[in-house]
Length: 393
Ligand code: PHB
Image 1 (cartoon, helix red, strand yellow):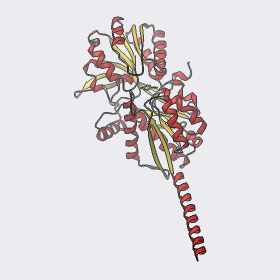
Image 2 (cartoon, protein in one colour):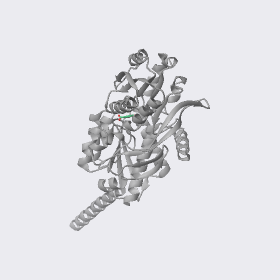
Image 3 (cartoon, rainbow, N blue to C red):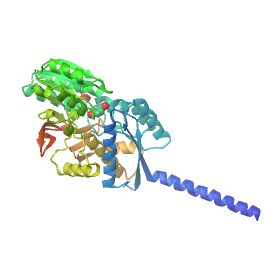
Image 4 (cartoon, rainbow, N blue to C red):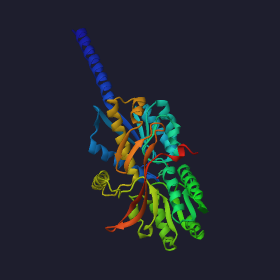
C-alpha cells in the first residue's frame, strides 16, 4: 500500500511534472517575447520614454495577441551606454529567450547588439539609431527609423537652391553627426555653397554656449544643426539666450533639433527655422491626426518622431507575425519584414528588401505658430527616399 501509494504518488508527480513541462513548452511557443532595450535614464531618457509610450499605445490599440501568439515586451534601460546594451541583449537572449530585440536609442547601442542578433539569428529592430552603416552590421537588422543622410542630403540641396551661400555647421560628434555633416556638406557645396565654420559638440552633457558663440562670430547666412533627439530643447534655449535669433542668421538642419515633443518649450526664437525630416506632428493625414490625438490623450504630450518610430516598429513586428502565421524564428520574421509597406503617421513607408532599411518621404518644413503653438509645417515633399549612404560612401 505504502509502496503502491508511493508508486501512485510518484506517478502522479511525474505526470504533473510532465504536464507542467508540456504546458510550459506550449506557453513558451504561444508567447513571442520582445526585448526592448532603450535609454530610460541619462541624457537620452526622453527617447526611451517616447518609445515606451508608443509601444504601449500600439499594444493598447491592437491588443497583445497576434496570429495566435501572446506578445510580451520586456523593457530594459541601457542608459544609451553600449556596454550595457550588449550585456542586456545577451541576458534577454540567453535567459529570457526573447524572439526579437528592439529599441536602440543611439547608434553605439544598435552596433553593440548587432553581433548578438547575428549569433542568435533573431531580428534586431532598430527603432531610433540613424547612422547609415547600421543595417550592414547584421543580416538580422531591420530599421524603421531613418538615416541622417536621407534628410541631410536634401537639406544641402535645398539650402544651395534657396539663396543660402555661407553656412556654419554645428553637429553632434559621433557617427550620425558625422553622416549628417558629410552629406549636408557634399550636397550644399556641390550646389555652390560654402562652409565657413564647423563645430562638433559632445554627445554627453553638451554645453552649447561656447559653440553657439563661434557660430555667431562666423556671421554665416545660416547655421546647419544636427543634435540627437532630446537635445534640441536645451540647444535652442541657449541659442535664444545668446541672441542668435536677432542676428538674421537662419536656422536649418535635419529635423532632429525641432523635435515635436520639445519645440513648444523653445519659444518664438525658433520661428522660421527650416528643417528636412520624416515626421511632423502637423502632418496633415487622417492617420497622423488619429495618432497624435491618441498619444496626447494617453500621455498629455505631443508625440515626437521617436514615438512614431516606436509605433511603426511594433507595427512591423505585428504584421510580420501575421505574415508568418505566428512563426517566430528569426529567418521567417526577417523574410516577412523585407519589402513590407504601410501607412505610418509620418506618411507611406516601406522596408527596402535588399538593405532592410527604411524608405520614406522626406518633408521640408518651416516652424510656424498656429493657435498659439509652434509646429513644423511641411511645404515640400521628396517621395520614397532611400538611404543615400548605402550607395555613396
Ligand atoms: C543615433 O544615435 O543614431 C541618433 C539618435 C537620435 C537621433 C538621431 C540619431 O535623433
